[in-house]
Image (cartoon, rainbow, N blue to C red; front, top):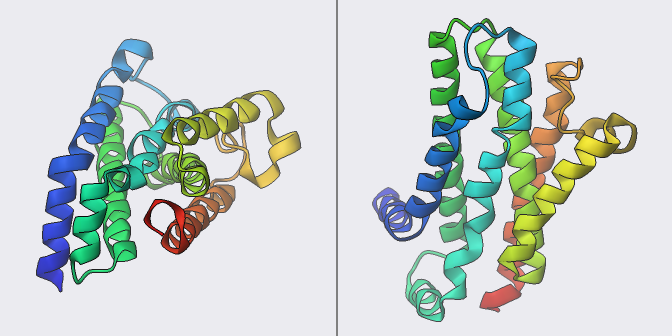
Length: 211
């Protein structure tokens, strides 16, 4: 079982995820060109994590169902012993691990720039935003089978957070921690994003392109 799952993950990374991961790496790499990354305090670091790195969730998580648009791939996966939903779950976990790795590396770079912050708190703030933004796009993709629209929805959510703020989004405001809130409040975003991801897998498993 583990060997088969590893093979699925390896094939997915080689033929699908690697391109999105490369874009994510580039997105992280250009950060120093866009913003200061030295001698920052925790709120300044939190602002970078919430306002910028949340987009990694869009880059890495939203394309989860993209391989399913190829009929040959769908037929191949359907012929295997591993259930299609399991294959998608492996894809999702692999993308999440890539996301976590990039966030950890980014925070390490900030530490080397003499920034002062709590590693765990800022990591969670970024992860919560990334998971929630990615989850909104993923749910849209599972419902409408349109990847362009799936990419647009997280950007709309981001714009709503910028414009409406906590007044309209409450616990699901993206910028709560850097806006002076408690890190515990990011739990709503993290849990919400996971729920959206699970719903996406369930919905996709019952219909969509592979019905």
